[in-house]
Length: 310
Ligand SMILES: *[C@@H]1O[C@H](CO)[C@@H](O)[C@H](O)[C@H]1NC(C)=O
Picture 1 (cartoon, protein in one colour):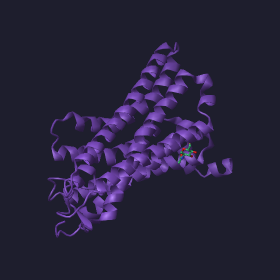
Picture 2 (spheres, protein in one colour):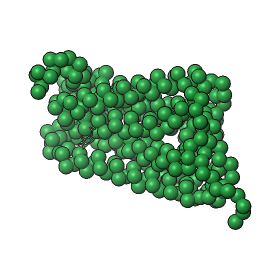
Picture 3 (cartoon, helix red, strand yellow):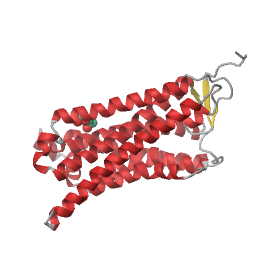
């Protein structure tokens, strides 16, 4: 149509209004990222190596750790690279895959929290039938369902965003390629992509949050009926870990949506918390309060475990 050249690479301008803070942010984010990697690798090792942890709850937790690793790795390493002074450019394909994996892994996590809430609901409200209901096949179906759901969701968002022509400016005013930041650069009509993106992400989080909420209401009612204080305590402690994790994951997102005109800095801060701090907290939240995980980790680090287990 016009003699504009098509964009072949994008420039990530970084977190809004943080010029001059690159070194501080680099050290802050790289230490947080290291903690995320370390914590999740430890949890994965503990779960995979200890046969006592081969139960549905830990399978889901293992999957969550795996996706946490991937989720923070879609955005953070690239950001660390350009904070350390390397190139801010990202190829067109790189940008598209960043957007795809961000929404793919993000929605899988959202589904996994829901599945984990359902798992706790069955464990606490139907303890005698737990083994029958959460059998191996059901667990596999649930996990592969989260994969497929996430894949469809991400394919829709990515194809809608990148079927538009990009021919003008290539400067993404953000620290990674997310839909709103990329769409402002499109030359075509962005209203469909914008509307679908907003509705899909919003609906998905609302549905998950609603299902999680329903599960925990049932759980709460069940717990309040347990007579022994010790039993109540035990049921409560597993669930409080999950509720904390969910609040960390959703709290920030809800805050963004409640703001009528979120400032770019607030939006970016919250998204960084979500990309970096939630994946780092998940292993802490689940393992610090959990005797089984702690003893599995202790076993890994003591030589004795080799002679005992092999
Ligand atoms: C993820 O879930 C599946 C099905 O429940 C399980 O077989 C697999 O071991 C889990 N992956 C990890 C890393 O825990």
